Length: 236
Image (cartoon, rainbow, N blue to C red; front, side, top):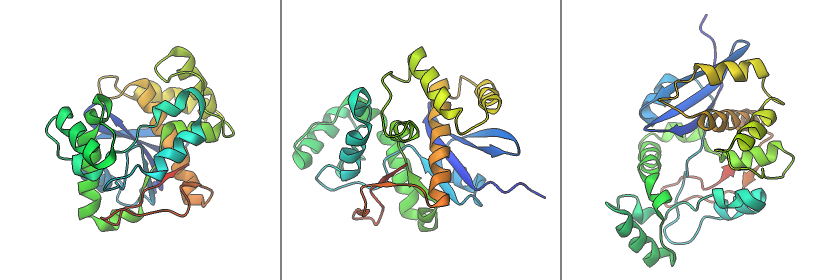
């Protein structure tokens, strides 16, 4: 009998999507080129928690991003980027995106934000077309989830540093078996995903399980929806 996988944690990794899930007594992973490929591979999953903005405003900042920064606080608050306004999704250059964003929002749009526009566009287009997946796909943010796992306090160190990696691994070891964590880290090809991508996907999995159990919190609550009917909330 095929194993039933109920929750997937997903993080953007290089040019693809890294998904992780519980597998028997351990942890397993897969790498997918598109949202459609990921959702097809996990068509029976009940919750897919992904680190990508879902639901975009037409002009103002999302309350989700404002509340997420407040929740994380301290050094890691700056790691919660503001989602773009919808009109910049198809901007051909960062300068054009920044110009359009300033017209609507009063603020420019930086290089880092522009770099993930293709990934935001992928999920936005997919969820507009596949309305059935909207009931299974949820937005999370790793730094919000790690702060929640730490009792509501954001981490001090950047995830790219040794101290930051080890602090995140220790937190994950409180909810996942450490041997399973180490086994997963070894099994993921570094050409496809960095070590911190794996940890981000894992904490997304933790949040996915909280969503399924009904223990998750939404930022903000009640949840607003964008013009396309997509929720604008970060869950943890």
